[in-house]
Length: 115
Length: 111
Image (cartoon, rainbow over all chains, first blue to last red; front, side):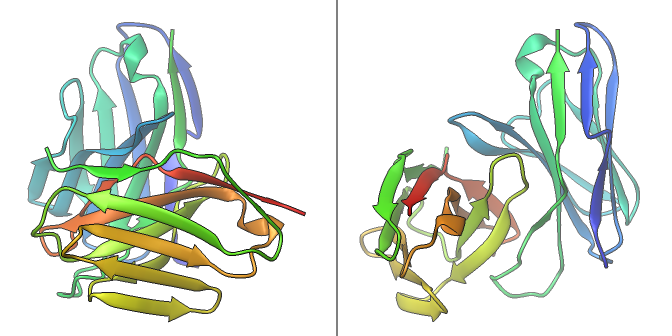
C-alpha cells in the first residue's frame, strides 16, 4: 500500500544536540507537511512544501529547519534541541487536486524527548 | 492568528446515543472544513470534509456547516465504544492546502 513513513519512531536526546526526523512517502503526492502535537494544543504546522523547490514556514518554524530532498522525502531538523521541543511530530502529505477537499495523510509520528 | 476552537471534553455518551461535537473558527473567509479522528497514540485520519452550508452525511457521521455563524459540527449516530477517540476539527487555508487544527475533543462512548 502507498504509505507515509517516519523515522525514527521514538528518540530521546539531550539539550543542544542536532536531530533529524525523516519522512518518506510512496503516495506520489507533491505536498508535504511537518506538524508537532502537544497535549491540549492540537496539531501546529511547522513547515510545508508544495514541491521540491517550494519550502514555506508554518505557524511555529523557529528552531526548526527542513529539507525536501526529493518529491518523496521531507526531513525536519532541530539544529540545537531544547526541552520545549519535546513533542509528537507528524509528517503529512496531500495531492494537488485543485479542489478544496485535499485530504492530508499522516505518518505514524515520531515521539521526541529532549532532556 | 486564525483560530479554531473546540471544547476539549471529555464528552461522555452511552452506547447507541448521538454524539455531538462542535467547532468554531475565526476566519470568515475559510471555505473548507475537515474532521479527523485520532486514536490514542495513533495518527489522525480523515472522516469527513465539508465546504457547503448545510449537512453532509456519510454512514453514521453527519457534518454540519454554518458559515454565517462560523461553526461546524460533527454528529455521530448510534455511537459505539470504538468511536472513543479525539476528534480534531481543521479549517482549510489557501484553498484547503493548509490546515489549521483545533485542539480536539475527547469522546468517550460507554457500553
